[in-house]
Image 1 (cartoon, rainbow, N blue to C red):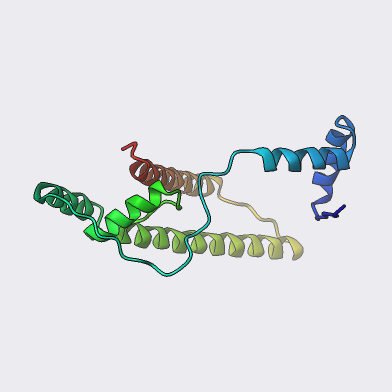
Image 2: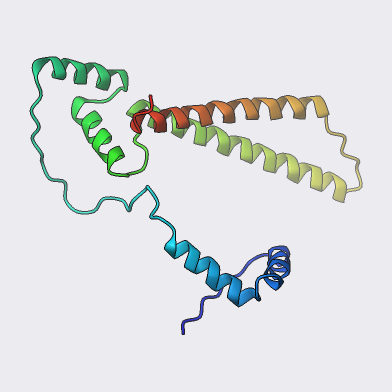
Length: 172
């Protein structure tokens, strides 16, 4: 029989031990969880495609070509790119993004990295002040305002990502 081991924080291990005591022990609970995971239906997102791309020819009527040009233009994509994204989304590939969406997501990641860097600098300065015996008195109104800005931006990001997923899943 194979052995599977992993490391978890002490608090998680303690909580798991308490739960496992009601389930026949840690090994029994882990075996059941693994069996349940293997019996679960396959996730919608499949492995990334592999292999060399191959060409497929599809014929559309003139009116359909105009519609394809319009919908692909609205997404900021070429007709071919839009058709490929649509097919991939139906085959279970991860959500497809237009070039504009890629740029916007990259900008969001950059901004989040800047915010994270700023938070680290603030924490470092506060810790240094405490270590030097100086009191740290944060301006709570500024912190609350920053929190609201971050929450608003995260809500917009969630909305954009859900809208994109809905689009490619045909719900929008």
